Length: 464
Image (cartoon, rainbow, N blue to C red):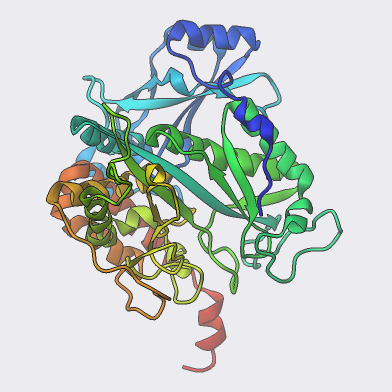
């Protein structure tokens, strides 16, 4: 069951401008006072500056230190790589992508936001910037006359405010005055517990031109899922980037947290970011996964085989944190391998029922904590490698894939090493990105290892 607001289709004039002149008109029409100039870093976190609108259009060069793309989620830096790649920590030039201009509906004063691209001072794009990584993959498709299409599904938990990280997270109190105890998958009543919150999410989304397709209650207590309408990969990655911010802000207005941690609550399902993918021929507009008789094509199977072959090496881009791997356990409503099947939710790769024109592959491996630019880039890159090599997939799984062996990395260090060792993915993403990204992941792991967990105190304190 799903909840949906019809007015979500009426969003075409609330986001984006074709030029600086149109952006200026957008700002003037809405009496915008400030502009948030943001760029997504390796974690998909918004970094940037807030400027008076008048100053923004006055033509100053926007810049930020290059170290923003080396920063870990804990705020540290892998100095052994940063000191080698950017020893002076000089500024990067940020250029606005006016197609992303949108309101910031939760701001106290009239405010707009614009996603920026990062460049070196000689004009070269910063190749390890996540948005640039995705653009590079999309361009490889377009050189072959193809347009990839994606539709993300983002799961998240609503939880009570948690001011002390030593305490476990708990489901929030809904309008009934009670928190969820059991799982309420697809329950309309459970969604209605937070009607006011979701109305605010819809309002914030409409104000930004973000298109929600459906909203459902997922398996976990307080776990929700929002599905986005399919479209261009860069636009959808931008939307997920903005959606995460939107949902967090709306939740705070209702005195609760929204979290995209992959496994925030023990003994509850983890949160995924499933990515549906297809490829169209630019000239004809036809889905290359179906032939004229409506049957699956060789390209469809090669794309699928590329995912099977290369997703394990791309895993650190799909499951980027220690916590991500807590989600990927047997019989936990999450995949443990890259088996595939028709309408089979136990496999890492699912082929949903559809008309031939809508034939697609659903990658169920990514977790909701993943950077959307990198998760989409990795998924499309693996499929492209399969298309180029004409790979053949395994046979589809009938029944449960949970009984099969693990063939995905079990931890972030193993996953980072697999990315470094993949010549195919390194050649596609570039040495700079792979070197930077894996250094960040290792630095984050070292920070994690400094923390002693409750499990260690419970089982080791008096027993070893």
